[in-house]
Length: 338
Image 1 (cartoon, rainbow, N blue to C red):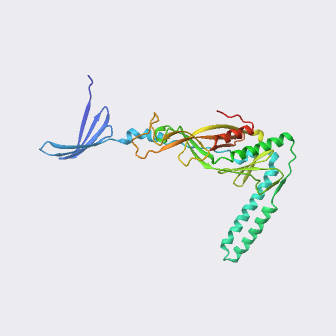
Image 2 (spheres, one colour):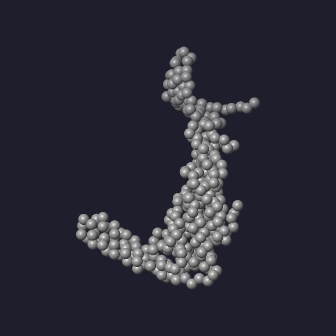
Image 3 (cartoon, rainbow, N blue to C red):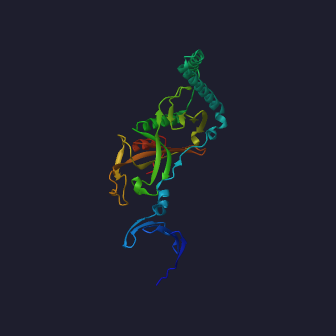
């Protein structure tokens, strides 16, 4: 048999403190009404009619006490997927080339600002600056180009052509995304059974050279959220804001794989749907019927391209058609991770 020790201290004025092994509770009241807070944090209100034996008890539990740890673990901690600062991609051998591009981009930025002043042309000074900006823009677009003539042997020509072809194949996908953030899910039940969440944004592949380069070969640009990659035969230019960097192909690594993605947006037309789940799902995969508007969600198979380098490049891309990702890898000699 267990013994329980309890002590009650009456402080007067209807206020009483209860001391027990469970903790400290207190109560306060007047004839006909008493409020009690238990050691567990529950609040009990007692209404009574003195002298009649009639009473009514209303008790509420401390919900925050039991759910505080759940609340903190339900929301995944999202981690940014970012590359190193652009200074990490500025080797000495590319210094002059990088400086030339930076000068052209700076002039182009100035011309944009001056052209913008046309909107304020009600003042003569802004009309004058706008005209200057227009002429500067024409100069930058026509004369402000870096000419590069490549003489490639058979090996390097084939390597470059396959690189261009690989990005052209990827560009045939209905949708392309860059993964900006990712986080592990601790409570999969409220995230349709997903093991992780991602924040993604569409990116573009442009099959032509940027305006500041004039060359006799084809060039591909990959415009990402904060960076633009320009693929040349001997290096990859990295543009981030007004800063320029360059990476040798020897320093770039690429992994090709696929992911099963629970799609909450419109499914791209070239995507393979491999299964379905529910927005709120039980552990056995059945829908949680406690939720009235619990919609069914498709599980899509997407291709994954991970570009990284020893110098700090870190980019994760998704494509809606995993077959294009596989062909991308085959063209540049990367084995598909099944």
